[in-house]
Amino acid sequence: MATIRKRGTKWQVIVRRKGVAPLARSFTFKADAEEWARHIETQADRRGLPPDPRALDRITIGNMLERYRDDVVSKKRACPVETVILNAILRQGFVHTTLADMTPSIFSTYRDMRLRTVQPVTINRELALIQHAFDIAVKEWDIPIPHNPLSSVRRPKVQNRRERRLYPDELAALLSACDACRNTLLRPLILFAVETGMRRGELLRLRWDHIVWDKRVLRIPITKNGTPRTIPISSRALSVLQELHSGRAERADAARVFPTTDEAVKLAWQRLTVRAHVDDLHFHDLRHEAVSRLFEHGLSVPEVALISGHKDARMLFRYTHPKAENIVAKLG
Image (cartoon, rainbow, N blue to C red; front, side):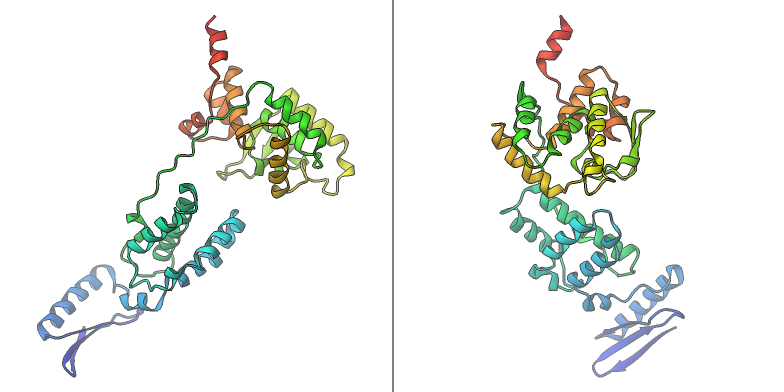
C-alpha cells in the first residue's frame, strides 16, 4: 500500500515493498499524488518496485568511471592501455556532473573538443569505453540510468584505411639498414612479420613453447580478438626461428622468441625507416604485406584467415592489396 500524507504545502507519497528501499515523491495536488501512487503500485505488482531515481543525484560520471576502471578494466587484457585512457578522461571537468544532470550533449561537446587534437579512431575508442561503462552500470550495478547517453552521440568517421605495401627493394633496404641497428631482434622481427602476418604484440608475446617443431606450426593462445589460433610456419619463417633458437641461451629472457619491449621496437623502427630512406611505412603495414602475399601465393580465403586470424572476410579484404603487375603476369 502507498502512504499519502500532507507535509506543509505538499502531498508526500511513499510506496513500500518488502526487500527494497521505499520510493517517495512529493506533489502540490493530492490528485496528482494519488495518480502517481496508483501508477507505481501497478508497476511494482508487475515488475517490482522501480529504483529510486534520486540515487542518480548522489553519483557522478567520475564515480561511475572510477568503479568501471577498478572493477571491470582491471580484469581486461587491455588493462594498461584502457586505464591510461580512463585516467585521462577522469581529469576532464564533465566527470563532476551527476548522473541525474548528464545529457548526450556533454559527450558530444567532449568529442568535438578532442577532435581538435586527436584522430577520430582515438576519440571513438574513448567514447566506446564510456558507453561500455554505462552499459555495465545499468546491467550489473542496478544504477537507474534511463538510457545510455552515448547511444545518441554520433561517432566521427574514421578515414584511416591504408593500402601501403612494400615497394620493390624496400624490404632489402630495411634489412640492410638493420646492420646498423642496436636492437638485433629487429631484423628477425621484420622477416617473421612478413612471413606470418602476425601483429607486433603477438610477435613480442610469442614463446618458444608455442612452437610445435615437428608439425611446423605456432599455437598462439592469446590474440587480439581473444580466440587462439594456429599458424603454419613457412620455410623462411622456420629459418628465422632456427637462427634465433641457436642463440637463445645468450638472451636474458630465454622464454620469449623476441625478448624486447613494444616501445623499443617502435623507436628502433622509426630510426630504421629513416636510415633506410623508406617513407610512410608502419610496422603494421608488414601485416598488410604478408596477407596480400598469401593471396598472391594462391591460398584461399579460409586458408589466409587461418593464418591471419580474421573472423570476418570483409576485415580480411581490408588487409589485401594485390599488386597490378602480379595480376598482369597471371593474365598472360
